[in-house]
Amino acid sequence: MLLAEDEALVRTGLRLILGQAHDIEVVAEAGDGVHAVNIARTRTVDVAFVDVHMPGLDGLAVAEELARSSARTRVVLLASDYRDEHLARALRAGVCGFLLKDTCPTRLIEAVRAAALGEAVLSPQVTRHLIDSYLAVDRSLVESARRRAASLTDREHDVLAMLGAGLSNGQISRRLRLGEGTVKGYVSRLFVKLGCTNRVQAAVLAYRVGLGRSPEAV
Image 1 (spheres, rainbow, N blue to C red):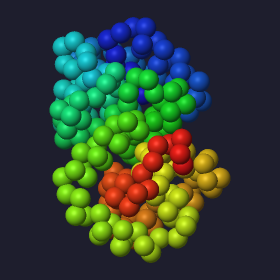
Image 2: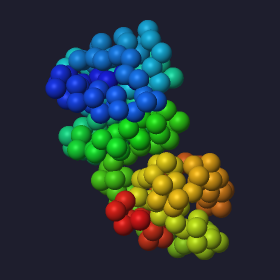
Image 3: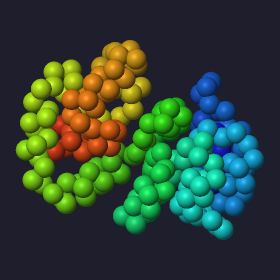
């Protein structure tokens, strides 16, 4: 993976945290956006952690450029906070995730693994903000969501609640004490039953039916 962060101290901290995982290898680092893009173009990079605020090209511009020139690289943006315009631009650029810099070390490691599998990785605060914004557009969809969720089993409700909290398959697996393959099966069935095509849509539906809660509550 690639670490793109202009503050050397933060970059070193990320490298030390991720180095604790046996299945994650930091193959390159960059202190600015231009260098990050050049690395991703010339080396095999599965996941890139990219700071939103960097000199030269900022993280959002890096994500947009990599979407055009290095589709293999899954970009996870890092920021001290989030703004609506940043989130909207990041989603349009097709980033794999948006994490706040106060994310705990365990969550950072899980985020790399999830991003490598193509899963969305969002800080819970970001997930809630996106969903609240989406729900504010049309609350008339709540009843439709409740009808679709009525056919779910108790276990499927549990999994949906955790999707609503922004948890990865690995986290759900540990919370419910199920194999990760079993969790993937539940998620796939939920998509079919609920008419969703991805985890963000499922999370939105979870909030509509009152299942979206903080990770500590599930």
